[in-house]
Image (cartoon, rainbow, N blue to C red; front, side, top):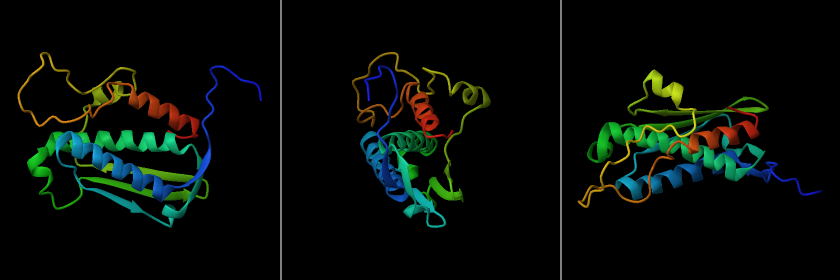
Length: 171
């Protein structure tokens, strides 16, 4: 096969959906723990044996998409409840449901109890460089409970996740 410059060719491999989703939940929990000092509970609900469903896919692409979607939900929950309240919630504020819709399609739903987005923000969310994160005007050198790396992709990650979804025939 000749070298084709600029052609997207993801490495396809077999993986189990349940394993991929569990790893994404674990990774986002660790990122939230690093960023906020606590992670909201994330409930994984797999229906009809979907956890054992083998997929021929690019595992790194699907992992990236799931992590980005879960990061958005976790950030919305943390903005609504804050560090102190999120630990006292009786139900999981982030729920991931996966089910087989037929023998060729998997439906993933991510439901959160976060702050939500207004209609104008929803419309802009698919544009490159759009972010809901306010950029600090001046650096502060005080203790802020703002740990680790940024928890938002500054408008790049949603576009990248959409591209990966399109490569896999979804979105």
